Image 1 (cartoon, rainbow, N blue to C red):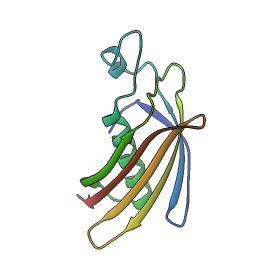
Image 2: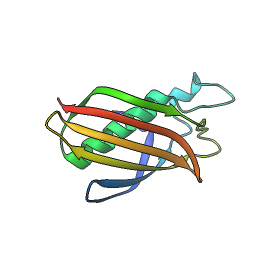
Image 3: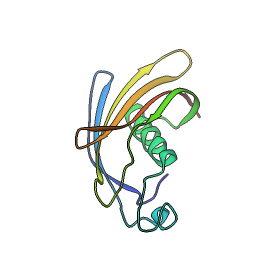
Image 4: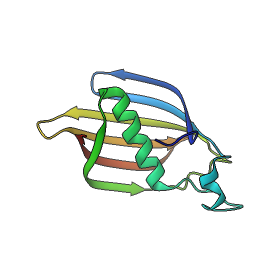
Length: 120
């Protein structure tokens, strides 16, 4: 769990589509080393947020089994653009949960992720 790394402002699910609005905590200690004076949200933290939100939606603890598509398309600077929109598609399969997500700030696509999560 990323304690105090972000605030979940809202989450809504319709069918297999989830939309979450979050705000990154620009004062979190991770930004002291990533990077002082020019903070950048670590990609692994963004991937973890997607996992946490997926867990909330499905009501189960999950483990990332595989990921076949991860594209970091824009840097997320929490001092300039802390508010993010995550669009997450969650489909249950025999193997687990197939997740496709897109993360945006303003209208800029910052991250695309396709993963398979299995129940822990």
